[in-house]
Image 1 (cartoon, rainbow, N blue to C red):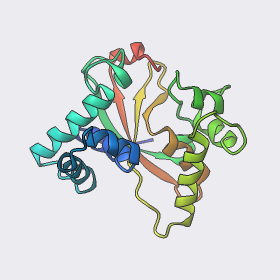
Image 2 (image 1 turned 120 degrees about the vertical axis):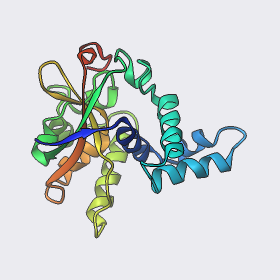
Image 3 (image 1 turned 30 degrees about the vertical axis):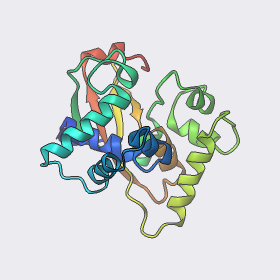
Length: 206
């Protein structure tokens, strides 16, 4: 792993939003009921044409990720975490991505990697172990999209936490990490965000 220096919360939040913004169901959620197309357009612009020096964009992205995932609040995806995470950017080889751990408490990823929780195990099983939901389809569809794309699409950074034992566990990006293993011949290295805090030991999905 190559350390690329400190990262800001705004960078991490942007990656999280970019990972979800193309989902039709997520867009419908953002638009609300009754739909607010102006708000949705603002969210799409903040994800697709980001400017990290734009305070309004940063605030909009933060509000979305706080509402949907509890960023900084110790709830939802951040259950058990204090609002003191220090973030860094890092470069991982595809082999190192295979060593990442899936977050616990997610039935689909537990089904794919029941022995080690490692992405490498999940990638080896995704083609023949049915998870009972859409996970297999989502992983294989993204792998096919990457295989058929020239140039390859840009993938948002995977977001991880450093566990007390030193291993990295995925917060956001399980599907992308699994696809990176499947397409390792095309994706030799990726950029990730790694968060560290004493409270990681209390994270609900450690």
